[in-house]
Amino acid sequence: MYQRDVRLLNRIGSFLMNLVVTWARQWPDAEVNPITLLAHQARGDNKIRRNRFYEQFGIVFAYTDDTSAAGIAREMRAGELQPWAHLAENLSVLPLEAAFDEQNRELDTLRQSQQTMQLRDRALRGELQRAMAHPLRFAARQIWYRHAALLVGAASLAVLGGLSLLARVR
Image (tube, rainbow, N blue to C red; front, side, top):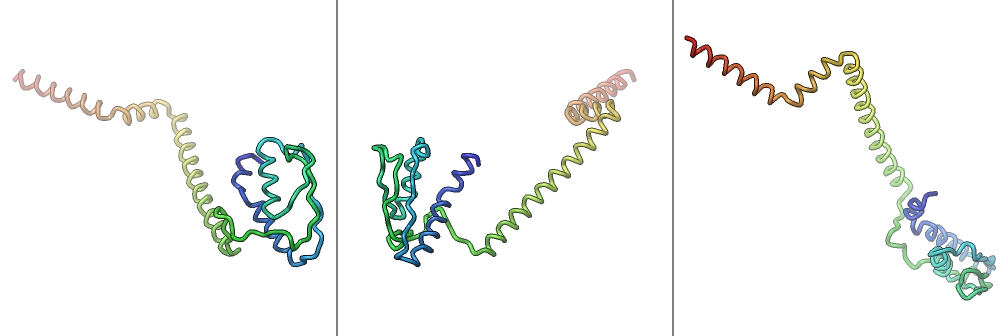
C-alpha cells in the first residue's frame, strides 16, 4: 500500500480496534493476551504512532529499552480496556445503505466521465484519420481556422484595392 493511501486511512485502524475493545469488554474478567512491541517496528515517527495506538485503549507496556521501542504489555483484564468516549472528528459512521448509495453515485460519475473520454477519443481518432487521408485539405483547414480574420481582411483589402483601381481607370 502506498504511503499516501495509508495517510488517507488515518484513524481507521483505531476505529476498528475500538470496536474490538468494546466487544471484548463484554467479558470484563477475560485475560487480554499480551502484546509484544518489537524494536524494528519502531522506525521514525512510527514508534510514536504505534505506542499511542495501544495506549489510547489503556494498554500499558513494560518497555525493555529507554526509547520505548520494544516491550511487552502488562497483564490486564478486558474490563480494564478503555474504549473511546466519542468518535474521532475525522470519522463518521454511515448506514450501509448510505455508503452503497454514495459508492453508486461515485461509480455513475466515473462512468459518465469515461463515456465522455471515449467519445472525445473517438472524435480525435476520426479527425486524425481524416487528416492522414487528406493532408492538404487538413493543412488548409488549419490555416483557415487559425488565420481566418487575417485572410478575410487581406481579401477585403484586395477587393477594395481592385475596385479603387477600376474606378480610377474609368
